[in-house]
Structures are given as C-alpha cells and as structure tokens.
Image (cartoon, rainbow, N blue to C red; front, side, top):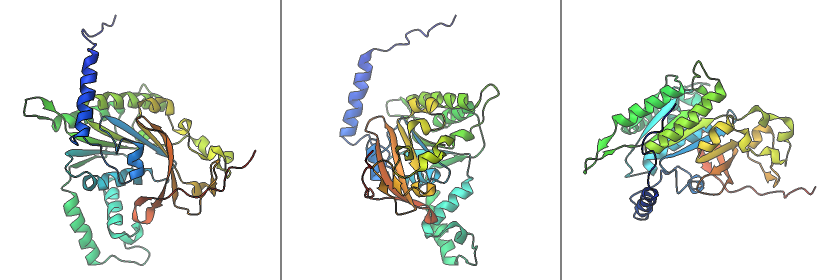
Amino acid sequence: MTQLRKNKWKDQRQGFTEALAYMKGRMLGEITSFKTPWPKFNDAATDGLEWNTTTIIAGRPGAGKTLIKDQIIRESFKLNPGLDFRVLEFSLEMSSKSTALREYSSVLHKPYKKLCSADGTSLTEGEIQSCYEYAKERVKYPIDVIEESCTVIEFRDTIIEYMEEYSYMNDTGVKQYKKTVVTLDHSLLLETAAYEDRSEMLYSLGKVLTSLKRKYPIAFIILSQLNRSIDNPERNEDGKYGNYILESDIFGADALLQHADILLGVNKPAKQKIRFYGPDRYIIEDDNVLAFHFLKCRNGEPRLSFFRSQFHIMEIIEMDTPPTQGRLRT
C-alpha cells in the first residue's frame, strides 16, 4: 500500500505570502514577464510570457509555428534587456544549421534560395561578412540546442540536469535557478516509450511540463499539430464557424489543454482558399495573413488576432484586423 509523504500539505498562508511578494515584485519592476516581438501576443499573456508557464502553439504544416518560435528566440535578448535568462531548445525537426540559415535570411532580408546562391544568384562577400558580424554577436547569448531525439523521460531528465547545472547560491545561501526558456519543436517528435502510444506519450508530456514549471522558473514554448479533421471540406467553406481553430482541433488536446497556460492555434486562411474567414467573414485579401486563435489564456480572455507572415525573410509582423463582410443571415 502506497503511503503519503509525511507533511505533504502546507499552510495556506504560504501561498498568500508568495502571492503578495510576487505582486510587490511586479509593482516595483523587479519581476517582469518575458517579452515576445508582438504587443498583441504579450497582451494575450501577462505583458509577455510569465515564468513557470507553458505556451502551446499548434497549427497545420506551413502555418508558421516554427517561425513564431524562432522569432521569439531570435529577438528575445534584445526585447528583454537586463533580464538574466538562458534558452534551451529541443530542435527535433530542424538542425541548428537550418535555424541559423533562417536567421541569416532575416538579417539579409533575402529568401533561402538566395542564401544558397541558387537560381542563378550569388551572395556577395559583403553579405557574407554581414552574416559573420551578426553571428559573432549572436553566439554571445546563452542559447543551447539539443538535436537528439528523446523520450518524455529523457526530455524531463535533460531539463533537470540543465537547471541544476546553472543553479547558484544567492547572497543568503539559498539555492536559485536561472530563468530559462525551453522550446520543443514538435511535441509529436518525442519518442514513445515501449509501453505507450502517442496519446499516452502526450499525457506523460503534459504531466512533466506541469511538474517542471512548478519547480523551476521555466517558460515552455511547445509546438504541436492539428487533427486532420481541420481539413474536412465543409470546414474550409467561406464564412463558416468551422474555419476557426477550436480546442478540439489540437492533436492530443485532452492531454495538453489542462497543462497549458497559453494555447494558441495558428491558421493561414488563404492556404485553404478561404477568402471570407469565419462567421464574421473577415476579408482575406492577402495570402500571407495569419489568424492567431488564443484559445486559452489562463490569466486573460481568449481572442482572435491577425498577423502577416513574411516567410521570404523569416519574419511575422502584426497587422490591423481585416474588415468584415458582415455575418450572413440564416
């Protein structure tokens, strides 16, 4: 018979005391959130991503999930000056070389093929030098990458090892952990253990994310896929509610939703030939419009915001909400 750990409970006053300290720290500016490149994204969270949280970004292939994650990391140190943190990326889909090439694309404002001197084009020595100067500064930032595939347990153990490696003692002799942004690209690329299927693996991942974020000052950014039902023809007819990404569209939603603090579904309407998006019939004139469905905001209200992708230079920018044609009468 399993025995409960003695004194497993704690007095409620500890929670109230910690909450007051947190509120005062934020009031004084001593505690801040982790800023992303987009005010709309920051507003959906708590003026940015709080530590001890999990953000899940889901979408179809090619919708820009990885670009969102990459741009957040690429601009993170510039947007968060004075914030002492590290980044640990589990890059199970793309190699670090591919990620670096995407960054160089943003630096030079040139598409990937031009970086490779393809299609009859060639980079200049000056452009190569610009990338070199960028890299020389960029590698000063504390970003580490893991490319080897792993199980959920190995994912957990690696993070624990990493957090312990960069822990330190404060002035009063209390052990402290370095704030760390941990990314995973993508959740389905984690290996399943011999005793589990993909669904069970995602349940295990959700539990691990919650366990780790409660113990360590981590901001998780996890990329995920959508269920195939999102591609049913009736969901891609103009002006239907089914155009929108729903919580149930997230692959493994039952496993991940309860563990997420921010759940974001990313859609690219034009890719499905949708020109009047959703029941409000947002007019989609630009093939690069992205719809960000903030499906869960633990400390805010769900919302729909619009962005524009610039894949040729590996950037996403905010845009105004498109005009609507108006709801159809039924």
